[in-house]
Length: 91
Image 1 (tube, rainbow, N blue to C red):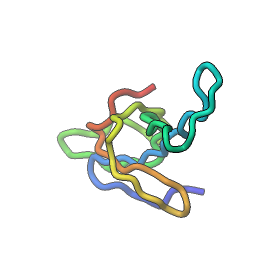
Image 2 (cartoon, helix red, strand yellow):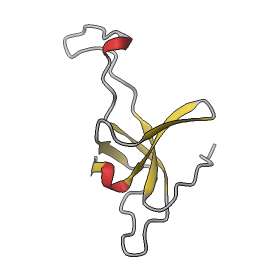
Image 3 (cartoon, rainbow, N blue to C red):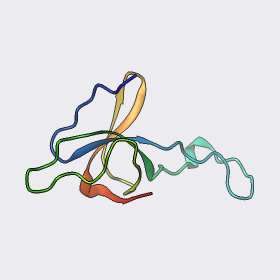
Image 4 (spheres, rainbow, N blue to C red):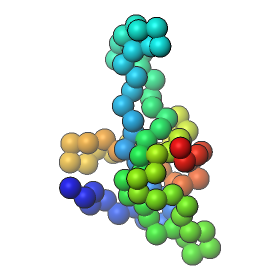
């Protein structure tokens, strides 16, 4: 099913990666102590600005700032809408 959200300008819609369930040593992390993920997959992109076209594409796995974007829920799934400048790297 295609995502029916069309971001405006230099914004992108990101599906965040799930939070880590266990530590490297095998300890389970309780929900209250889980860190907000800082990577995800781009699921929709805007048109960009005339002087600055977007460099990310749908399907790119990205790394973004811990507090970047605005959280939304659409059709039961959670997404982030953020500006392309909030993206640090394409993985």
